[in-house]
Image (cartoon, rainbow, N blue to C red; front, side, top):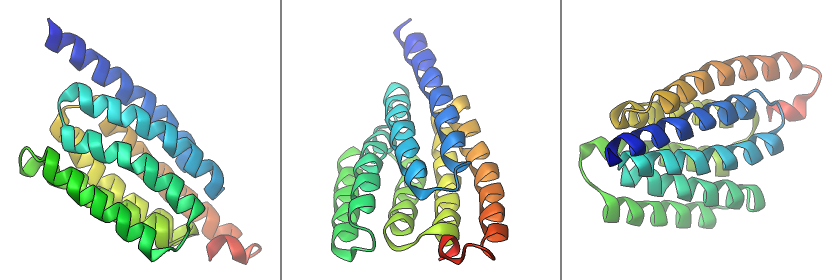
Length: 175
């Protein structure tokens, strides 16, 4: 019975994150993207915890810190390295099996993208991270999380196209 409640709670938080991710990646403004991703990752962390995917849950919580730090310290290699080290430590402490690897890859890609890139390049890197997170959701058994990442990929691709088209008028958006 307890497992059924955990599974249901995990699915609910996956669906909540689905809505937040689509709103985030449909935004052409990096600021709004960051704020919505914070909220989505709280839901992801709770979802992974309910499914017992502890590495993915821990890294989802660290994604929240990463988003805040990347916003306040853009392109800061030292802060990026610190996030990667803490993520590595969290991964070692929570490692259960090779099924934890996609979450680790997603964390690395997302960290590099958020700290070093902006505009289209950042969104491409975050799209690759979304593919890795999708694998984590599939392994955990999350319907909402898997759909969230799939829709993030589609929405992200559309937004990249929109930014590219507008880039001819607003060159600073593409940089």
